[in-house]
Image (cartoon, rainbow, N blue to C red; front, side, top):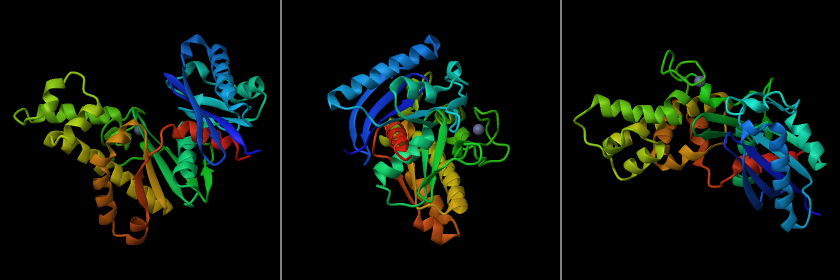
Length: 313
Ligand SMILES: [Zn+2]
């Protein structure tokens, strides 16, 4: 019988669940509130129930369970080392608890790493050898598939693309450092850039002026798509920052592909041109022309990739 997995993507607010075939086909999906404050045991029992309900219509149990979680994950130990949005789960042997409760093997990785694996199998059909996935949301995360394997680094922390310094002494980042990619292309950076431009150029007309109190990246995307020049400047900044980060990655790793995923990547058509421009300007033509940068087309890549990784063995 063809192998089947359940994948989950645990975020601070919701936990997404998918049933996925070994070839990467989405067979079923569900979502449950994470509610970390209700405690880790309540969370595990709630999610385990949801896994069983997901499997019922499929008429069989999944062979393995894969967990993707936002934070610094000890993949060997199956625990979360550090997770600002899931403090209650830190240190708990989450992977083994799911494995025991659901009576099957389980694996656990950082959610950007599982998204990278999801991208590799689902979007590229394993047709590339070296690729990176960049998750664009509140934070900027990343995962690397090198030599057709998920690359975790020495402590499982590889691929923290959002915290590569792109501007020495630059803008303050949520991590406490300065000049990180996330400080120029993460959600807060986008909102900050809109507010800064509105304040710096009080005479410049922009539809964003009417919602200056609570601006979200999607407002800036809508405005830019409608031709608002100030909003377009903001996305150009995001594109230049991403271009710099991706050029650095390409120089270091000579990637075949980079895939952009996550909420903010939905605005990708507004800034992917700047990324391409920055790659074209790089004097190292061979690697910079070789790499394909594209926007993810599949939802739930983090959960799909987690499930698929659990089948890798
Ligand atoms: Zn940072």
